[in-house]
Length: 227
Image (cartoon, rainbow, N blue to C red; front, side, top):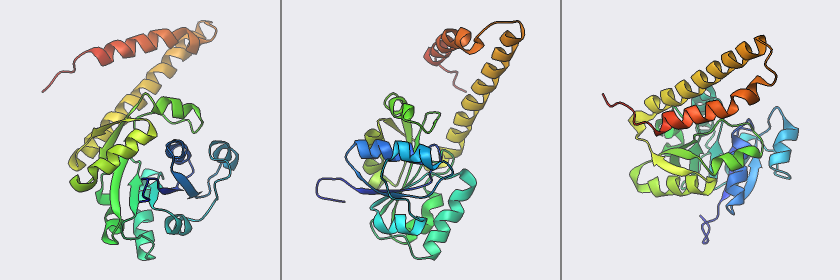
């Protein structure tokens, strides 16, 4: 880490999450070293203009903090593959954004001396600058070895989020909660808007917006039952 606490940050994963996390950290003063190629280069360039597009090994080589934001099924193989190539560096921070994995998935990097962190910002990413405003009102689940937990918490804050510590063993339950609320909410809203459209209501999404928001706010304010 630099004397002023600023890091060279590389992003592996140019989908909806990686560029936004990179932009948030850049906004906190960190320097972006590179990002891997994505399927929508125009969108990534709009969020991270001028950031070099590199392969994963070069991103790791140039970076003090590597943010991995790839699909769930790709994460273990990516981390292990880079370890097999001797890419991970002693003292390098490696952070993944997957809700379901804790730090165990980063064991191959940790075996090479890297510092493993798991930080999941709890928003529905769009991959656009709108997400930066959402992060400012969001929480993030952080999981890390006790000695470096403050680093994970500080990075979550620099993304704009309020950090909440989730134990490594609790990450699967956390991921289930996130998947349940996102999938269920999306399904119910889509079903309701289709019904309204079917009876001729114009702009059914706009019609339901205030109702959905107020209902969700009320549900969130209610104390959940404890088994």
